[in-house]
Structures are given as C-alpha cells and as structure tokens.
Length: 248
Image (cartoon, rainbow, N blue to C red):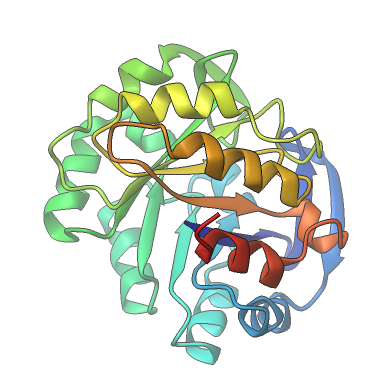
C-alpha cells in the first residue's frame, strides 16, 4: 500500500483546505516544486496533485507548475486532478509527463468521457469519487448530487481504470481519521483498485486502514492519500511508508 502525499495548488501555492472550502485554506508552501522534492526525499512513490483553481473553473489553471514538477522529478509518478474535462486537457498533461489523470466532476456528468479517455490512455485513468453522506459531490465539491457512490462506481467497471479515489469530504482536512467503514464497504464491492483519501491524521489511522484492508475483498486498497498530517508533522511519510511495506 502506498502512502501518497498531496499537493493542492491554489493560486500557485501549496495549500490544504478544510472540507473542500476554498475560503478555508492554509498555505503550507509557496514553492510546490521544492515541496514535491521534499516528499520524494522522504520516500514518496507517487504524488497526488490537485489543481484547485482548475476544479472550480473547469479548465487547467496551474498546469505550468505541474509540468515543472514532472520535469524536475521524472522518477516520481504524478496523478493529477482538477479541471480535466476534455481529451485536449488530458493530452496536455500526458505530454507534460503526468502518469495518471484523475477525472471527477466529468465522470459523474459525462461517463462517456471516461470511456473515451480510458480508450485513448489505457491504464492511466483514475476516477475521483468524493462523497458527502454517501452522495457524490462535483464542481470542486461545491455541488452535491443525488448519485450514490456505489451507483457511480458501477458505471466504470470493465474500463481498465488504474484506480478509484474515494474521499469522505466531511473528513478531509479535519484530522479526524479516515472513514474506514465506508472505505472498506466500497472496496468490498469494487472491481477497481481503491485509493483512500480524507482525514488521515496519524500513523494509527494508517495502521487501522491496513489492518482492515487485509479482510477486504474486491480489487483491494492500493494507497492512501495524506495532506495536512504530513505538512503539520503529525505523520512522518517515511515511517508511514515503511510500515505499509512491513509484514505487520
């Protein structure tokens, strides 16, 4: 299981939001490229980047920074989300060296787009399902739909997706721990590998998630995304990855 550090980009800076609220952000670095290098030095095997401005505007805003990161650290796979709503945008990121494309809002609004992207970029598409009380949120978490997470997930079986990221918005940035029951319930029913996100606060959360995932059916949990906890020093990335690699 990978521990995947998050870099959320807002106005060119590395920030963290609370429950997806753009007005409730904390700036952790004004040099996202340098920050990516620090996570790589601590053992990151993949980097999770979200263009927050792009998520709200529906088009890439911080693409130049993303390109700078992939060029500076070509050995570090990057998964990028936020504003990927056309094949043209997808091509720009792939050409820039991004390894995986995260489709969130457009996956809910236009499932055909996911099928087209999966066909053009096999094995490089990740679906982002962000939930509030079990319902999928879109438009940078600003709108909550009536679509249940389970129902949304079933739309994409058989497309050869790289993963699905499940985020409990109520936990995101709140340092309350992951919603392990909901995460595991989804993993049990998923034929697509799952990446957990939202609320990871300390090593004990990862210990609990790893222990619970051992009993999970489906395609399994391949990673967990963490943000605020590693920025505030409450979780050591190197220690967390070493634990995930252990036989415990």
